[in-house]
Length: 143
Image 1: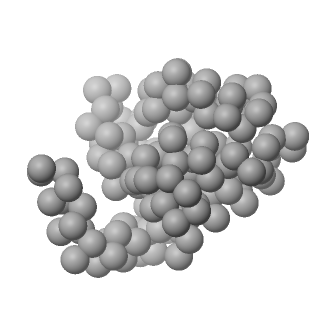
Image 2: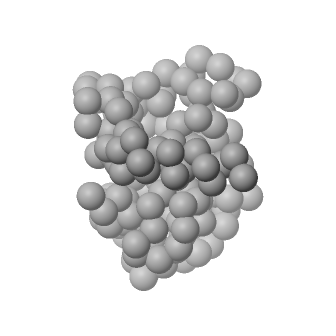
């Protein structure tokens, strides 16, 4: 599954006037996981960050909605800034060649959609490459 392609398509549906050529790079910068079209966004890290967030419930519940089988809740501007930081949101908008409001509108659809697509049955394990991929990711973190 090409999550960057899925994310780019979702972004561009919302971001009329944005620069599609920079979408993969901008998403990679925001989500981590490498660069280029073959990059795999670090959705596990994103969800871990959301669950460990000191603001508590609203961010954790938001993540749960993306993993669950129901509708995906859209993150608010404040939630996105809390998750990524204002500077990263501003850098994302600049790289996309658009204003912050338009960039956030695109992210409100793309981020939940990417997590949803990567987590059939509410589990990110398959998108990480199964047990082997999880072990590989853990070894990188523990270095």
